[in-house]
Length: 204
Image (cartoon, rainbow, N blue to C red; front, side, top):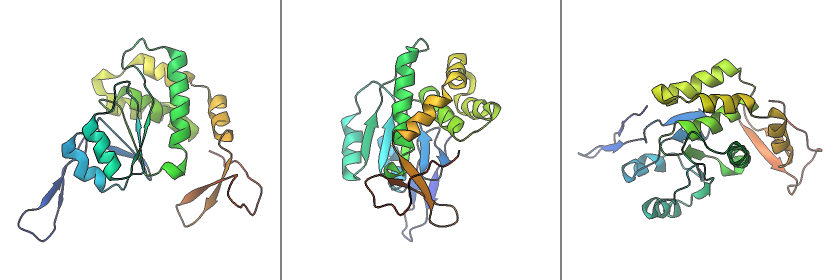
């Protein structure tokens, strides 16, 4: 999945913005993609990212790090092996920690990516969808839409078996409450902030 965006700027040469392959919006201010390359940097600049969640074990390339530094984007790396026989306890722990970063709106807008934007990214997004109370068939359909013929039964099984109770505890570990500020916006409030009301856990 990909697209090329042409921006009319009034000059003779129009700017062409190229998203990374498999780029898509997950939710407002949450995006997913494959590994971004320098040709994708102008497009990523338009997202006004605060954070990147990187799900591979390999070191982040210096060219990409320089781009993040220039845009004041914070990098969160959770090293997950890209093979099918990855250790389930390690995968579960990494996904849980990544979810804590993902649901913290102080990190938004955020981009999630691995190498191809299929398996590791698909597992994280799939578990996030369970938090949103998506039905399992819809979670699987979204995963398969991005993974295509490379869809892995092990990934689908992991998403299905991911402990929703632990996922809820992940939310409690941050201690927050949602407060509306506009028709479609929600803000995360933390203990250290001056709250008018006692914290409550929003239902998902």
